[in-house]
Length: 103
Length: 224
Image (cartoon, rainbow over all chains, first blue to last red; front, side):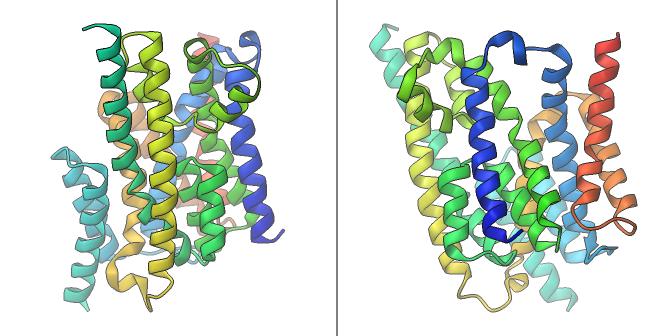
């Protein structure tokens, strides 16, 4: 599978998922367990993605102090109720500075 | 407030959210290029997928050298929440035929949040449309700008751009973590599972595996 096929599959799949909610008969999708799964699964996947992208590299656990500092700074920005874009900028700037200082 | 005021307030909400969130398309464009996607690939994702978390998930997994099937599966699982939004919006938007096909593309976190926050149905429809239009335009233009700009950079690590993806995920996750202890536990469990599995499984699979505690919690909830 080339990257373009993965992109095509994701585009088609994401659209189908959106349309399903608007168009499908209510009974089919309005199952409590399904609803709960769909509420919980983004939390699990996003947490896992954060962990993997910050603390692993090339299939191995790896502690990168600069990236970790960036994530910590993002958390502080969120605690201070900073807007989305400020959170992202804070993470990038702190990571870049930490990398520069730590060499 | 009369109806017209409700509707102009909905337009204001929609434009505000759309423009602000759309700017983070810059971050997506940058993340996509860092992950090894081309500028056209980044732009097609924003135009046709148009759901940020799934887009970041795909590029993140690709950048980590993940298998494309597991990368796509993870991104699709994240897109599943839009189905729930569609269920909630169906009664509010009441769209049929070609307009439904168009409206479906706009069923995402931000449009749902703005639509559901409005005091009546007409304002909800207005809010949905205003958010969808402004976010779609801003998100796609910013993706192009972010991708194009980043493609000229030598080493994106110098700018700390590798921390932007995780920071975006954390920001999306934050309101849910703040609202519920159960969700905080789930997040910690999912992160731990993914990290423990990383040395033993191909890239991308540990992230999919982290959906298991969510599945477990949903089934336990049903059994009760």
